[in-house]
Image (cartoon, rainbow, N blue to C red; front, side, top):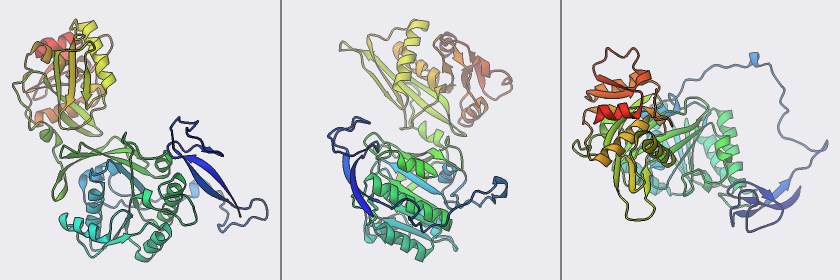
Length: 452
C-alpha cells in the first residue's frame, strides 16, 4: 500500500499537492491542511472485501414503508415530517449554547422512556458525569438511556453493535476520528470517513442516527458541504441567545417537507414546545405606539402572526443608516425605493430601522405590505389600529400582489381576536363570508388609505 500526502482546504474541500497560504479555489487564507492518503492497489490483482453488486429492476425492489418512530416532541416530529425514519441519518447544526445537546437528550429520554425503546448517546466533548448532571436537570434519567464518552469511531461502532439501540446520537461528529487516518479530528478526511462508517451502519442495521455538527461564525455547517450531501436530513437550530425562543428549521429532508419549523422555549428545565407561537410573539405588543404592524406569515403549513416594527428618525450623518433584523435587508431597501417612487414618501434623509419582534425570521414576501405600513406609520407618527392585520407582496410598480393560502392567515387572525385585515385584491375573491372585515388593496396607496 502506497502513501502520499496532499493538502486539503478545510473550508471548500479543494485538494492541492503543495501547501500555500491562500486557497486558489475559494480564496480563504490559512485553510490548507496536510493529509496522508493510503492508496489501495488497483487493477486485476486488487482485492475487495465487499461482494460485487448487481443491477436489479426497480419494479423488483421492496418498497414497504417503515413506520416512523415518534420523538415524543410534537414540534420535532413536525419538522422531521412525522417522526424519525428508521435507518436515516439526521444532521443538527446550530450556534454553541443554543440547545442542540439539550434537545437531543430530551429526544433520547422520550424514546428510551418507552418500554421497548433503547437509546445510545455518544459524546466526544463531555464526560458521563457531565451528561448525567444535565439529564438530572432535564428529568431525562432512564435505565434504557445509555451514555458513552468516546471519540474513536471503531470503538463507537463496536458499542453500537453491542447495545443495539433504537436511536443513536453522536455529539459531535467533528470530535470523532479513525486511527487509520493520520489527519486530526475535525478535518475533512476524518469527518467524511467517520460519517460514511456511521451511515453504512445506519442503513444496514436500520438504526436512525443523529449527528451534531459545528457551525461557523456565519451560522453555516463547518467545513465544505460534504456532511450535508451525505446525510438524509439537515436541521438548523436557530435563535438569539438573548431570547428564550428557539426555532428548528428543516434545510434538507429526503423524507418530508423542508418548509416546516418547530418552535421551542428554553427554560431551566429544558426546551418546551410552543403550541401557539402567534400568541407568544404578540404577547408584549403595545397598541398605542406608531411604527408597529401585525403581519400574517406562513412557515410551512403553519400560519404565524408576527409584529413588524419600524423606527424612522432624522439622520445625524451624511449617509443614513439601514438596520434590519428578521427580514432580508436588501428586500427592505427595495421596498423603501418603491415607497419613495410610487407613494412619494421620501426616506433618504432618515435612518430606518426594521425589526421582526420575538427573534423570528420571515423569508416570504407576504410581509412586504406590513413593512411599508410600519415605515409609513413611524414617519407620520400615526398608530395603526391594534386589531388590524396586514398581508401582501409589493411589486416594483407599487402594486400589491396576491399571496398563497390566505384562508390559513385569516383563520389565525380570527383565532387571536383580530377584527380587520388588509389583503391583496386578488385574494378577495370568494372571501366575502368570513368573521373579519376585509379591505382590498391593489396598490400601496389603497392599503395606506385604509390604515390611516
